[in-house]
Length: 274
Image (cartoon, rainbow, N blue to C red; front, side):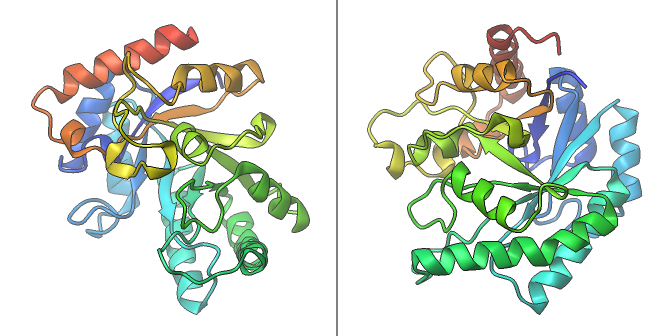
């Protein structure tokens, strides 16, 4: 596989699946990320994986990932049930992996030691489920202040400690890396990449939130192209998925044109054919 662009469902969560697939294919991406947290749409609405797969096949689209198992590092009987259902759905869909997000609830009360212990526990418990179903876990550090796993090196150390590299890879998110001021890069461990742009200049990186995440344009504090170029130069060959959360992007009447322009900018900056 050569590096290719993908589109997260967050680009247009309001659209029906067939319309989203049409948008993605028209924008020239190779794959999409399906989400499990959009009310009234696939997964949560009970749409069978085979039905989702047929729609994507009609538009020539692959699945980059299913996004996401939340609170994977807060293991419980409920989390195990949730994980098994989500991983089985991903396997039926033909997704190579599922994004794994840590606890990031304000006031969670975890100490640093708690976070380290819980992270290893979650990784250890989830690993046999992933291996049994043949699905990778894309561990995504989240850079907000309340996150229990902010940095790439924290994820790498924990996965190494549980002997989990047969089941896990990193999800590298340019915004999360920027938001928490991470400086340690582990490109050889990355299995999925997310990109989104930040244009507002009135907030410090740690003050930015998900709705601030837009498309990659000419005013990009995150330096998506620079971060991603370093990833590709290290040998990365996976998907790079556009993941905006900005309501202004999602509801724009010119969404197709804006997405196409942003993706063209990234392609040119990275020298991608796709």
